[in-house]
Image 1 (cartoon, rainbow, N blue to C red):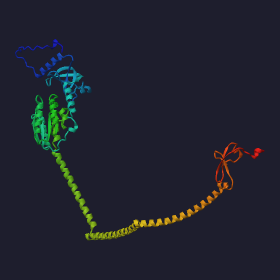
Image 2 (cartoon, rainbow, N blue to C red):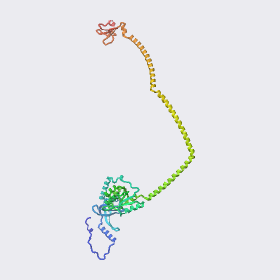
Image 3 (cartoon, rainbow, N blue to C red):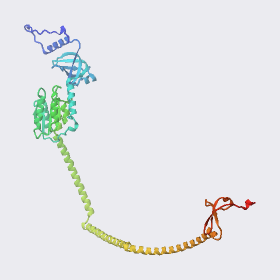
Image 4 (cartoon, one colour):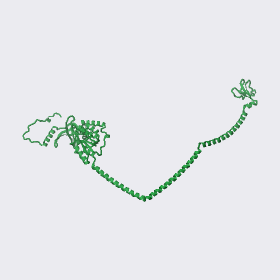
Length: 466
């Protein structure tokens, strides 16, 4: 704040007057409150990181505003008349905000607090930024993967607990475990906040893992501020829980508190008491379930026995005299044997008949028989062929003689033999008329026994003479 003469205080010790009346606590608180009101008559702006945000049932909003650069913090209250949904969303753990208001003293508790009437975002706090980066890094390595989660044992004999021996968490776990039926609780004392808490928690986890009988481990503590729970957001603690050889249940703080160990553990409980309810089976509930199961089993057995008795009575009524039943079955057996013998004999007869037919067919198809049949057939065919050949030869010979006679009658040689001749030109055409030749042409004259070449000296035609 700027220098203001009104903010100067004189702390020089003064000698008190004699018989000074001491102030009551209320008077002192009112005096301090009045001095603060006089100094901060107008509203101021302050900026910091929100921690331990907690809405009250009456609607007010309480949180702590801490300085990231030095060890300094102040309690802040936003009254219900000022709280809006946006302000409620802005004032979350790890958020960096800018507040307008005035500091004052709350006399009932003698507590210095800052009453804010306006809230503006100022980015993300350094702690929240670092926490988100660590969460993203571990998630990328697969430490929070659902497939890594192991089921919790249904009947654990020894339950390891990593928490403070002086805190309320171990008492809550023991109380719930005793109420639900009892279980062996093995405490590994650990420092859960402050310097050295991370090493203490990791060391306690390692000690419990060396005990063979431990079936499940509960790691947690009671509620506290964000600074109190910082050890359960440490990378070493998260990796130690993820690498634990037995299932781990994270039970840190209250319902609204969420730490990185909740993501790495195999199970997450809102409180240590709920963690005990998760890992310790309820003896009374199991006894009640066993009682109901026995009752249902007894009823089912009685019903089954009754049904069996009724079935026996019905069977006895249907069975009557066993000798008659046996005789009836024997008679039926004799009848079936007789039928079987008759069917067997009929089948044998059919097979013999089929075998005889097969032998007949086989004898008919024997190669010697086939060859003999084919030879006889070939002989018959040869005789027929010889007969057909002789007849056909005679017919063809007679037809040839007739054709030869007719051809001989029409042959030009027969004409030539009677004293005629045939004249042809060089091109082989016969000389038929006087116009086919001219004087000086060469013609060929064919007589019965020779061929004569002649030159035409003159062509005389009766028509030309006229």
